[in-house]
Image 1 (tube, rainbow, N blue to C red):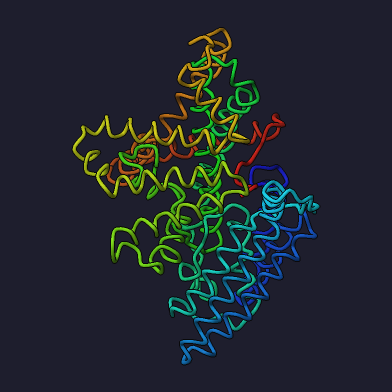
Image 2 (cartoon, rainbow, N blue to C red):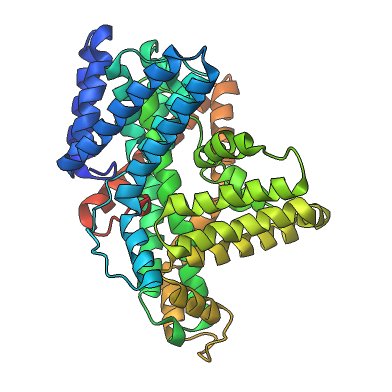
Length: 476
């Protein structure tokens, strides 16, 4: 079930909200847990057992770690076993086909691929479950002795299928002690509507362009068409994922939870390192705190620093998908992060801001080619088209078609990817709050309400009228 579906918007969410708010305090978590399990089971009920198995396993490890806290050696061993168990579960469902394919290619064997389907959101709830046990071990959160409360943390439907990755320490107190307010509910609704509009109005339009262009033979593609395609994809993946994160954060607030931000205008970055501090923040902070720092971080020799960075970025690529293109994408960013640590970062700081920004965008856009391409040959062929190395035209009628038909919406998306709309909204809000004139307050409030109602109506119209409603991060 997608957030951007009529079933969710007009049936599931209203019913859950009503039941949640009329239910006594001691039963609210039960209502959310049942709703979350139904939400996950809606599309593929059989794989609910995978999530339940993860909950049972990590509940047991949490208790074992907490009960053996005084024996540091045993506690560390238990944490290691927990990590191994979660990685094994993730590997079985996400990487079995990849491993078999490569073993067969290297050894000449003909092992049978069982073609195990990928449960939705398995990477997200596995990382959340691991953070729970590690946070208990580090005393960053209290152990959950009520299995239903731990089940709620791992399965909570707003962030279950696409994040953000909610660390246990972030919501540990709110699981058992939270208070819903009208201000939180109103801001949650607004955040949800903004996310829905980003997904339906911007991501889907950009995604349609990207899908149409990436389905073509890159060897015959004009340079202009190739650039339109990758720019469209860069916008699609940002608004697709950040839109879903906005909806998740908004839904969390409606139920009294406060999830951390997951995106902070990454396309305004002036270095690759800054880009990754602004993009998928929850994943970056997870790898930083649970992998990079435990490995030693930036302490010790330069060799250890670069080794730690290499491990983190290879794992980042692997986390995104079972494909060599994803591993190459992770390694690609790892190399640039290392170069920035060595000397490139100082050079970028010395450059005028527009040049540093342009360089960063160029690096990111090139990286998205590997992320979007199905395999290496297509990625290389597409890059050749981008730099007119395939012998095709620089510009052709097809490039002109997409430019004319979708140029305006892509330009709107580019502006929306900057803080400009937010600054304008804050100015209207400040005008409403500071003005002593009643008519100004009414006008500013009417503008905000009218804007939210308009984009919601347009987004719902797109949901009803369009059959094109993909979601990129389901496969991760």
